[in-house]
Image (cartoon, rainbow, N blue to C red; front, side, top):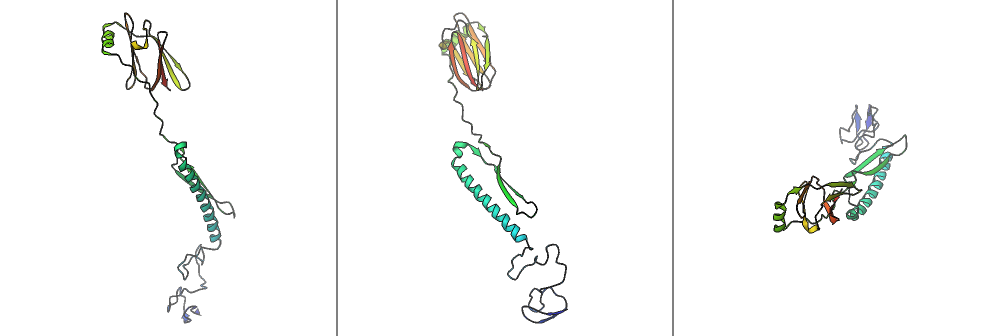
Length: 219
């Protein structure tokens, strides 16, 4: 097979992929070019040539992806501004590329791992009530009795009612929040009450009414 080089014009004898004189790529070779065909070669400007039809699909894919990413960036900017209000945390994004038949590929971008920030507001707890030294001595000198208690569960709180018969006022009651429990002490005329409530919940409020101590705990 003889032909002239399209670049230098010299006569080439034999089968070559490149011109033996100037190195130019030999055109119109009748060989097996593989699955992607002849266009799977580096052109003179060292640019990759995609097979016929690939450019259309690739361009459509990139256009769709660019639109989705633009919307994603816009949404992210808005969410960053509202982050303190909403408390949303974005762990990442998911990009899905799908195609059907000869239709252009579709690109969809979505968030994943959305959840409320784990920055829960600290519950304001009620102040503890402590006995004075005089009341502590009186409490220790009296016989002890465990008071009767009742429990009510409401939607957002738990209510304990503790019967303290003979106790005249809240001033004769001690309420101490321990690590995993609540300690109740109370002084009546001729006896003292002592109660440990084994519960680890915030004590948000308490009241004393008709010889009953009422505790409200955050559920």
